[in-house]
Length: 315
Image 1 (cartoon, rainbow, N blue to C red):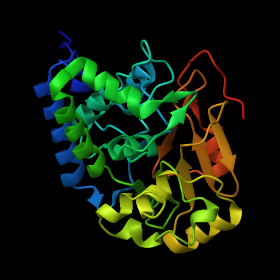
Image 2 (cartoon, rainbow, N blue to C red):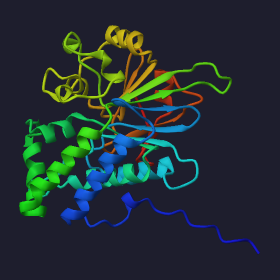
Image 3 (cartoon, one colour):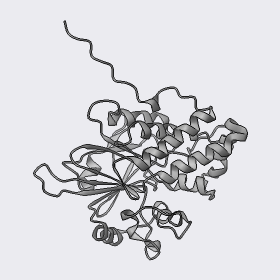
Image 4 (cartoon, rainbow, N blue to C red):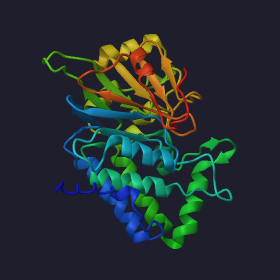
């Protein structure tokens, strides 16, 4: 008689959670923060993983619950031999409910995922999360997104809204700035080193940027607007080939996988060695990577997977 296979447990983040209960939500964010800081993969301001293994690289998510579920399933979290999964820019969706943003719920589910799978889930700092906890204004499609997010907390938690926001702040300040993948090949030779981050410093800000930030712990000064290294990095736009090659020399990185910028088709190649991904719309994609066989930037563009199975990727 063939034994009945044991069902794979559903990750907590995909289960019903009491996300209108302040005690539950605060605990989720605090547990997520502790997991970010204490995970064995944490090295200063970044997470570090090495081959062998698999990676599911993503772009901005912006509270897209269906794509979130698909990414968790693609990573095989909860199954034997799961992949590493990157998540970033989780809050501030394009569609609000009567002008109010309830994307704290998506962030709480991400925190639950990190606390359950600390070695395989990598939640990277994005400019929207940083702006939310710093109280800095962002206007997106005519919406003041920081205020809309705070209104969601007030509507759900009333006088406990500030307590929940403080727990969110703790979680965001614990997030790594990047994930570095050291991709040694099976024969022991050095392969392509990959850096996954929300963005890179813009060309105009490079003179102010401290490139040593990836090799040390973050400080409060790193989050300061326009001057801090973390702020400059997550808000960066307009990098070019010369700057990318400079960062290759400084950091020993061969391939950058980024978000932050719009890619209507799902992904954009920034020569010579950067790929920008979007995971937050109907053309959203993810990039599966075998860390023992890492791609070049051009190869990465050919290996993208659409989250909408009916769509065909076209660059």
